[in-house]
Picture (cartoon, rainbow, N blue to C red):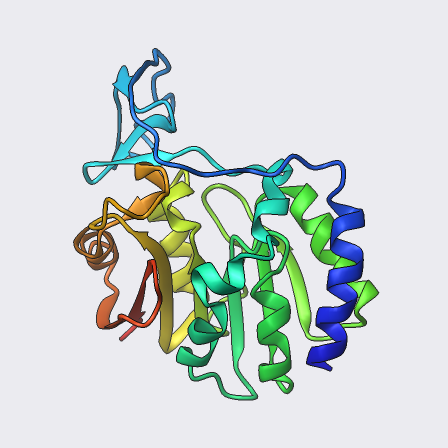
Amino acid sequence: MKNNLLSVKQKNIPILLILLTPLIVFIGNGCALETTAIADAGIYPHYEQRTVHDPDGIGKFYMGREIAQVMGHRGAGWLERSSRETEEQPQKLINALNLQPTDIVADIGAGTGYFSFRISPLVAQGKVLAVDIQPEMIDILEFLKKENKIENVQTILGTETNPNLPESTVDLALMVDAYHEFAYPRETIEGIIQGLKVGGRVVLVEYRKENPLIMIKPLHKMTEAQVKKEMQAVGLVWRETKDILPQQHLMIFEKTS
């Protein structure tokens, strides 16, 4: 099934994405003026708006970190680039998850389903919840799901503050190069925690900000220390960081109660 899936994806992805503009991410610097205030600061008190900020950010800061601009659906081609296999070695990431056939996995910020469709054969008796906040990405996911006749991938349209996961059902929540773009990271992670079973794992994969030689814009990278600080703030317990990927941290946290 896996080989068939990949061959079909290779055939249909270029056709589907021909109208989409690929996103190329390099190192960027500078600042921009932003005058927008956080209108809902009373409801969401954990954030700070600054008037001078990185042009690749939204001017909104959480625990000292500026939140990056979202890679929109027009950059979907970058997610499916052929060089990703060698640049990121995604199969190593998937192997490191130690998935069980009955697991329910939430792929948060699933995009085109790059990981959702690669994980689905490994949880044949479970399922993958492919979550994205962009309806256009959900459309891509649904197209590929039908084209490849995948039965155990369920798409979910989330919001900026809630991934809309079914409560206490998820064994593992995976976020690959997505968390740094969440407009409301605290509320989103709290929603993920609500969807997790006790003992469920949260896995974050982020480009290593500690390494200036990784050619990704600074706001699209995170340090291990920053991720740990933000996960600890919502009660997740760090279990392990696996240094197996060429450019990214692979950090594992657990819901303990």
